[in-house]
Image (cartoon, rainbow, N blue to C red; front, side, top):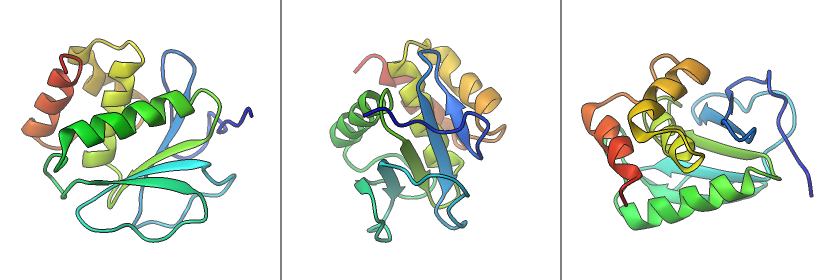
Length: 144
């Protein structure tokens, strides 16, 4: 299966490998265009139901994942699937947790950890990754 996002689509970020991942805030309507085939929901409580396959990572707003090993596993799955599927990463607002997860995907894709936040801010949203501890999480993501 080869499924991809429109690289000019709303919230779509291109990783150095060419993989495309869409970030978004769940409090906003689903953007126009094709639906994801796989989504990662980063929320403190259960996510709303969706028509596509998804994984929930318990991740309270402005904080870090409750289970970091699980978060890493889900992000590794998302990164792998992004080579052939439409992968979406989403939290409530689409900036802090989503940006942090996108930065971790960039690290998995070969972006040096110390450059990953800047990469996401340049290619996804200028205010992505909102807190100092989220930036530290990304910086330490490669070492795990």
